[in-house]
Image (cartoon, rainbow, N blue to C red; front, top):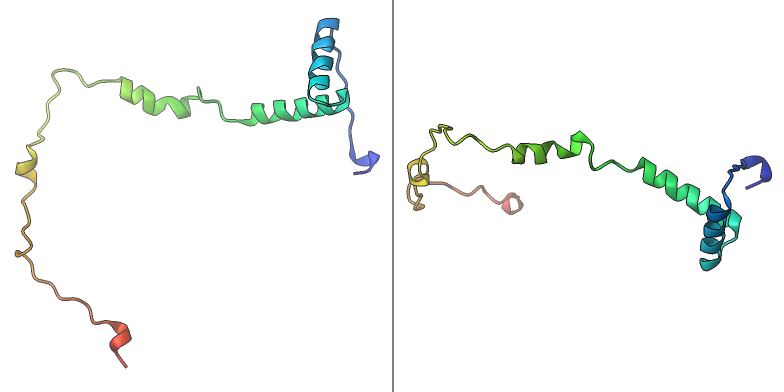
Length: 103
């Protein structure tokens, strides 16, 4: 990457912020320039991630939280009323011919 392909970003830190940043860079074996670059990229990535508190992600939780009133009516029947047990002899079927067996 040539110097014409890069842009420069500058910021100001107070003394405490600068010392914390300098110490962090030193602990990670980075120059201040490298640490600043990594910090900016990390911040951008974090900002672009989906917000888990966005209503689009919490709507199902909201629905789960809303319980039905105690007086709700239903026409649901017992499972035995809805499903007839199949014993395998009620229907006949034939298997399709195996296409590989045809010449």
